Length: 222
Image 1 (spheres, rainbow, N blue to C red):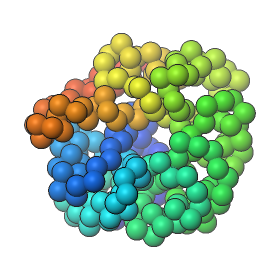
Image 2: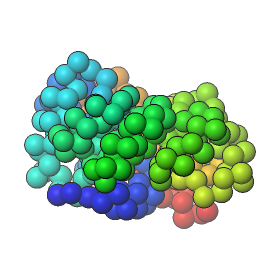
Image 3: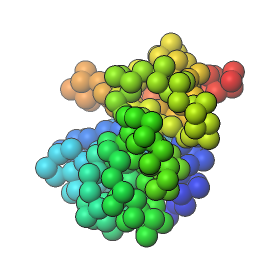
Image 4: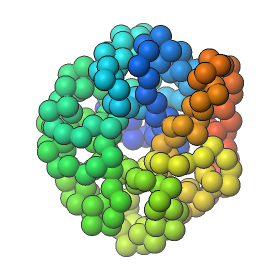
């Protein structure tokens, strides 16, 4: 099933969490995705950080019938050619740690959501000028919630996804959402080494569900 940019945006805003994960084993990657889905995730970023990431993504895409309402995107994309390659492979959206206009052109041409990574106000405004509806603030652990709260009054209609060092705790998530984040991207803090080593998919499902419940609570209090 193909999803529109608006559908993906709405779901990102509703759930408030976009897990990001990479792995070089297709079966384990699928189990992680399945646990996250069971925990309530509907927007998932597989990151392009392994030599066989394209093959793993293709495998996950072939399992889409098991996750009918899952919006599956690809992250850590750095150029236009790779953007096109993953769009052709079925990516619902493209996320990058950098702001590169050539990627915007490819995404706009194929009507796909483009989420560039930015670390300065100039990059953020440039991304917006190039059609980015959602902008990734990266690295969040370096920039901090104060960065977000400072720029929101300057460009008040921003939809920011915070990635990098976000923790699945009420204190950390509250700081980001109160600062003005629309959603957060969460990786190693959610998919811990212990869970992956033990293949404890039930615990992963529980952690995902708990994190999403925290976000819902924060959203309802705003």
